[in-house]
Length: 424
Image (cartoon, rainbow, N blue to C red; front, side, top):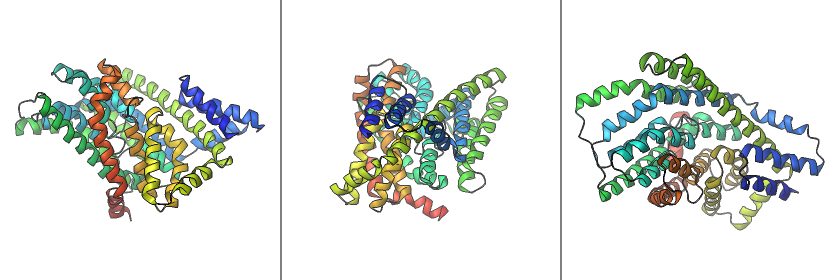
């Protein structure tokens, strides 16, 4: 009977139904054909969202939108440009640096692509960068944010597995920085080869002035990160602090927010949060069906029968997650696959924190993998370039990302050193 669930789900995706509705409809058809009382639908949906740490997600979404509309994101981009704009291809490098500092607080890589891309892609095109390169840089750099804390996908992964949010945050720091710096390296090589422009070097006075102007934007990430890791407040409390902080800075310091704008931001954030909670609820129902049909055990046995070598198993999981990440939104893929694959990883003695970083990194890379990478489509639509050109321009960035994935997979210390240093 499980084939019915999967078939309906795939057909709904092919018909371009939203993923949440695809999950819901496939579950409904399965339950009706199986003769299971439909009362299980609200029960399992409610149990999926009745998790305290998930309250942090609406907060971080509102905070990210307040940052965008309140001028905080714009200040971060400006500071990065002042800092490294004098290097060949400096605006492209600033694009990546801004994504690293923005740190995925908007929720997902797709949100980062849209928010930062709407500013950076037109600016890069205006300065003489090729449109396909501008889109490719933006799409690739947006995958860095959700790896570096704070990160909504990591909160989801922690919720699904019972892992520490603080440990996952710390585990993503070094891989995220490694990915960001690697993307900056290949960006510089391409910029030199194509002779992309650079700005005049900023004076120390200009840098200091830009830093002071951006200080309040940068401080937000540090408050959230060190507050959670230091045990000062929980992720849920951190999200509320982020909202209050972004509102105060956007209103009183940068003076870009007013009551009318704030109400629109809150309404948009409510819509995003509601759709996400529906997705989580249906994904929990979907996962419950998979468990009752013993699919996790089947998948685990299949992989382990093929090989019990840790690295062969991780290779298979990496290939699966990258494939899924090309056509499925990150949070949905995490909700459906993470609990199943985590059991497989644990069976070959992979640390769960290490696996959490590997899984998220895979799904991020999938978002920029041709021909279906979602971030490629978002950046291409902003830059008004064909997806084929953006995909071709993005291949060097994809190869670099895959190299970082290999390093993170083979060397667990890259993920585990910071959690062991601060929280063990």
